[in-house]
Amino acid sequence: MRPPYHVVNLRSRGGDTARRWPRLFDALAARGIIGDYALTRSRGHGYELAKNALEQGHDTIIAVGGDGTIFEVVNAVIDAGAAGSVSIGTIPMGSGKDVARCLNMYRPPQAMRAIQEGHVRDIDVGRVEAVDNHGRPLVKHFLLEASAGWVPEISAAVPTGLKRFGDTFPYLLSAAMKLAGPMGRDFIVQVDNDFYDGRYNTISVHNMEYWGGDLRAAPGARPDDGLLDVIRWADLGRRAVLSAVQGQRKGGRHLCMDGVDHHQARTISLASGKRTALDLDGEQAGYLPARISVVPAAIRFLAPPEPRASA
Image (tube, rainbow, N blue to C red):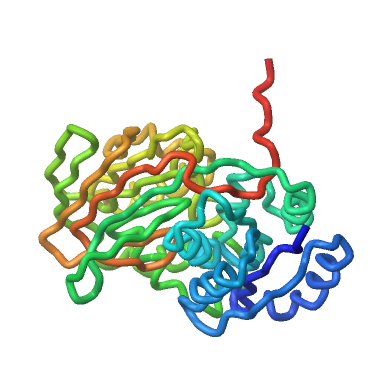
């Protein structure tokens, strides 16, 4: 079989991946699972590298980096119409490794074993129809989450240099810094056939359980159930926001709080009177208004078999 093509983001985890790449390359070579590879130069370059790999006939593409690198590879594969024939994998190296965590391969050796064994899971993705910076139609896909409001603005505010200090700490520090400012805005939300019009801190739509490192935002969210998990975060006060963060760190207790509402749906629409950016898998990707829908079993992901529930 032709070895996988690797899209490598040396800037992930605040540039720490550049230091670790030589040893990682040797480990991949020892397992016989690296062929051609290319290094990203800037945000969005991973998309172009994956697109080029597809044009060269590669049928397995591995994202080496964080969730943003996976996001670019996934969108390149879907946009090329190759999702049914190309397998995607990851070596988790970034500050955000939530996709790998949710697929039970958080450590690079686990991910390398999944690639080597070639086990494929059919994974749902979220499809987002929004607008770009100039108001033109935009379509993107996500694996983890789509969100709008205060929480994704935290992610956008994390300095690159802080990302080498862990998966969650940089986001918590950024959140603490932004507590002094306004945290709510008006949203119009449609969740399948139900409408909600009010002031919210954040609206988040999840395909998997985690975001921001070890924050379990959507307990029970499964990437293969044909559903998305929607959380409406009310216009919470500062103390309640801190409690919600701690609730996520403690396995999802925030869902028991007043003002945090959880739904499952197949289609969600979001709008706001204020210019509001969308966050997709930790990357800014368009603006409201947006329509979000689930695409069941959309991609082939190299991952360990799902653990069986105990009897």
